Image (cartoon, rainbow, N blue to C red):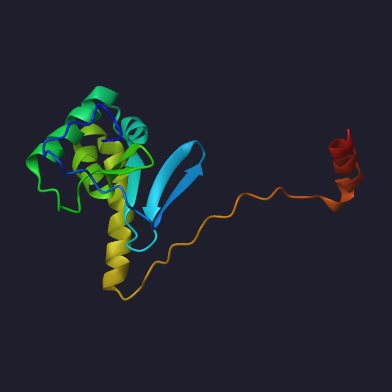
Length: 150
């Protein structure tokens, strides 16, 4: 195992460490991992701690419990990637309702909108957000250039 905190309940069987289509996104000090083939999303243990408000040891306890209770061919298991244990969106959805009801409510509202719009025949497409671009006032261009040069 990549992490000593992760117990092996099934000797000789490791978590999926080959996730070739996984990309790491770091935005505003938040790391997310997205499988570009399936669209599945994952977060690290530390991100899960921030989302839920639980302790690191509490999240590790849950990860180990899930691994001991579920079959390893279950797609809803934590995965390892580059030495990190990643928690899939399905487990976050299970845990977040109890741990952070306010965040869970916001997530459910967003998901409900996508679901209802889908029933009406609309489809949402994922598009990467552009970084905010500073507004440039042409009247103030000289002072902007002077500020960059100094």
